[in-house]
Length: 103
Image 1: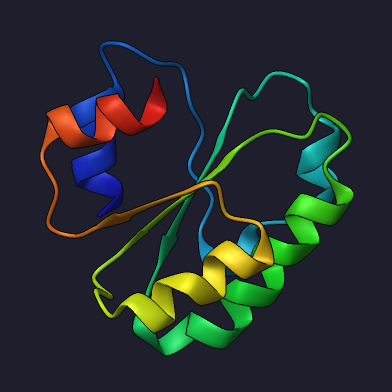
Image 2: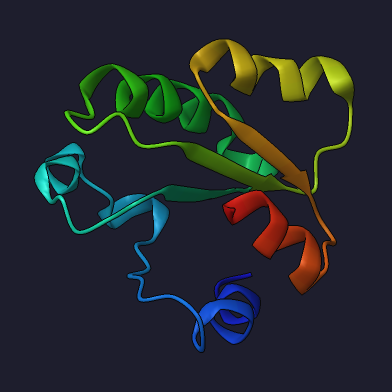
């Protein structure tokens, strides 16, 4: 998915990619980001919900959080809404879908 995001966004946005294990809440202090895109894998679902909530509570700039996941069940998607996610896109998605979510 990182490759797909890079292909879709590289010509229109400046961005950094951090893996699940090397993301740190200290990155939230960088005001150079306009949005946080979080690619969630099923194997890290519960941890990702916690991280999403931590981001929303600790982000001094109150940036929107966009979740990307192959999960399509409404009750699972609502877990992220409750944690503070602003948008959720179900994989697979098109470049148009992604750009629309970013606007």
